[in-house]
Amino acid sequence: MSDKQSTKPPAGTRDFLPDEIRRRQYVIDVIRDVYEKYGFEPLETPAFENIETLLGKYGDEGNKLIFKILKRGEHEQTGEADLALRYDLTVPLARVVAQYQNEIPRFFKRYQIQPVWRADRPAKGRFREFFQCDIDGLGSTSPVIEAEILSAVGEILQRLGFQDFVIRLNHRRLLTALLDKAGLAPGQHGEALTAIDKLDKIGLDGVEKDLVARGIDAGTAGRLMASFATPAHGSLGALTLLLAGHESGAAALRELDAIVDLVASTPVAAKIRIDPSLARGLSYYTGAIMEAAVPDLAGSLGGGGRYDNLVGMFLGRDVPACGFSLGLERIIVVMTERNMFPAAIAGSPVDILVTIWNDETRADAIALAAELRQGGLRVDVYPEADKLGKQFKYASSRNVPFVAIAGDDERSRGEVAVKDLRSGEQTAVPRAGAAAFVAGTLNREP
Image 1: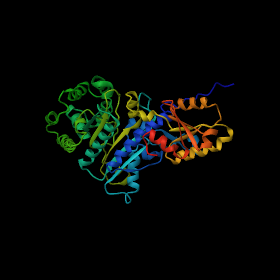
Image 2: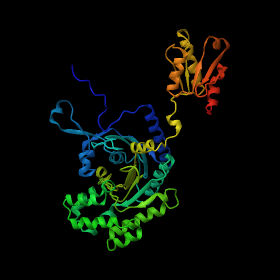
Image 3: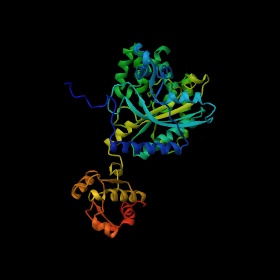
Image 4: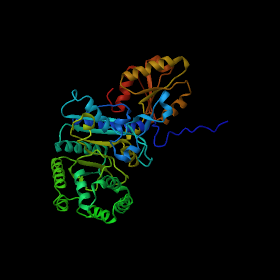
């Protein structure tokens, strides 16, 4: 006989039990509400794309993390792939904009909340299957787009209860200017950005060693790290001096300054930090880049930036675009560890359990449940005619606050006995008013 088959889900994926799903839905509802408050519209795309849609959009490191789908049927033996699971929601958006260019507004603001897949090494808050919660604004190069996105992200995190988050802000051309100033050749920029993107995980010394391992001269690597180590490296004044004579870098700095000015009057203003070491690993970013983080999480709660050239890969002409992606799983990990969820989220899935007096009254129990549901309550029915004590114990184990008992005496009087399992108090109420009685006790509208 073979060994018992494992029941664990694949590494980097999870099963979600009811309480976990309620927590996830709570976060998603807040995110969706704020996104729509800022005028973003919903969009959904398929779980998989043609492989050529995805390849070449994320850089060499990203290409390695794409889950490829083998050709099927008679082509399966070739080992070739023609489809791939979604790596992110941004490239599919770019494809959609190119496909439906005549059907979407000139300034297209969309949000998308769907799972993506990456063949990454699982770690705390890092999974192979995870949800992204994206917003993107397309059609304008105005820094108003960045300001609106930053404001929306900040409002979401504050509504969820985060107080200690920061949103790091940088610019790809500013970063390029720092690489130039340190003496890196243009052909070395890609390797350097990949190393710098690990700065929050391995520190300055770790990145410097990684740069050298990637073939960058030790002196050049040291100069680059020195530009990130200065205490004033996040001040616009210090960066202006550092980038003196570099026209593109100075222009990038002016764009960052404009974004900071635009958010100055919003609640998120105090959370913005200019950080020239922020890299964002994806190769399609062209302008401002941003990342939200909290101190006790390796990695970020989400990030994004401007990508004015990506849609052009599909359309043949560039469409300016900027977006941000919140990582649902990472947000939930931190909120769970910090006990940030409202008590009601972990409460009972139902308001009242209808007990069954005996087998002959099962139909009446179903009818009573229907009446209570019509009164706006969430109702479960115990499926068997067990002893009442056993039915009460089951309700308590599920944190159900009330049970309804319709025995022979109650039915003859047209009443229902409602027992509050939290206080132990039992009340006989008219059957027609049972839903209103429970709803009133729960401080909810009947």
